View 1: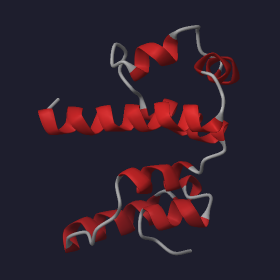
View 2 (view 1 turned 90 degrees about the vertical axis):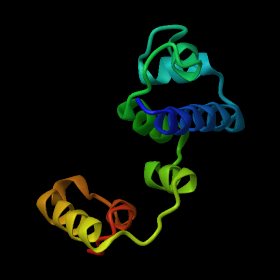
View 3 (view 1 turned 90 degrees about the horizontal axis):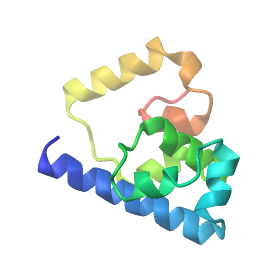
View 4 (view 1 turned 135 degrees about the vertical axis):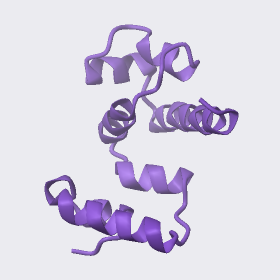
Length: 112
C-alpha cells in the first residue's frame, strides 16, 4: 500500500475511533453489537488488523451514522473527470439493487 493510501486508512481509523467515542459507546459494546471478538476493534483501530470496508459500513450502521455521509465527510466529492463520471454512472445503472437510498445514489452521482 502506498504511503498516501496508508495515511488515508489511518485517517479513517481515527475517524471511526472518534465516532465510537462521540457516540458514548464503548469499543466493547460496539464489538458485542457487531458480533466481533473482544479486542478486535482495538486491533483494527491501532492498525494491527487490516481495516475492511465491511467493518466501516457495519460500524456506521451500528452507531446510527449513514455510511455515505461518513465517507463524504472524510472524502468530500470533487468533480470527477469525464471518464470517471461515465464509470460512476455505469456502476449506478449496473448495480441498482446496491443503491437502496437517495444517499447511496448521491454517493455515486446518480439521481434516481
